[in-house]
Length: 220
Image 1 (tube, rainbow, N blue to C red):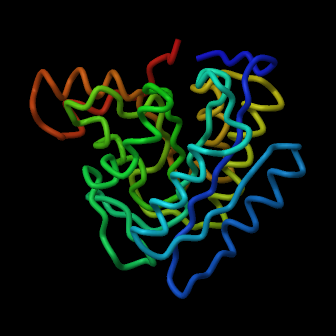
Image 2 (cartoon, rainbow, N blue to C red):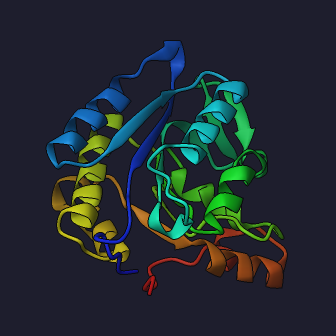
């Protein structure tokens, strides 16, 4: 997908939840993104209530213009996760279907144009957010299938966002840039397009990755 950055506002909203309230990853990413002139906002969360407040903060953000297509926020989840969902405070599992429900007001506001970056172990499995009959799920989600060191994640996602906002590249090309030789020996960042996942889910009625997780296709 090619973005017209002159007509749209792109902010990064870092949703962070780790053990003992440690926010080192979020703070490091914020400092790095600001070097590239990227607008970034930080929401430390500990529980579901905090998460709801964070999502509502994104939905009501003053840079959110009257027409949603002018405002496309990236939700950047910086936290632990498993193939089944995210872990609040590093221990409390919130399953993907429950996360989808909490995102409902923002999903409706953006009419399916939600952009998600998973800085989390097994973050790729967030594709299960699109395994639903909901009208709107997400548009784009990027993450890894395995373990992820947060320091490597900060580097990779800075490359991703810099490629999009400064170099104005396409989403698939920005993901390719994340898989630099320095990191690719350990990680493989991959992405899914929500409507494609949902279409296959409706056909097969399964969350099986090999059947529904569409990967590596152009996002145009």
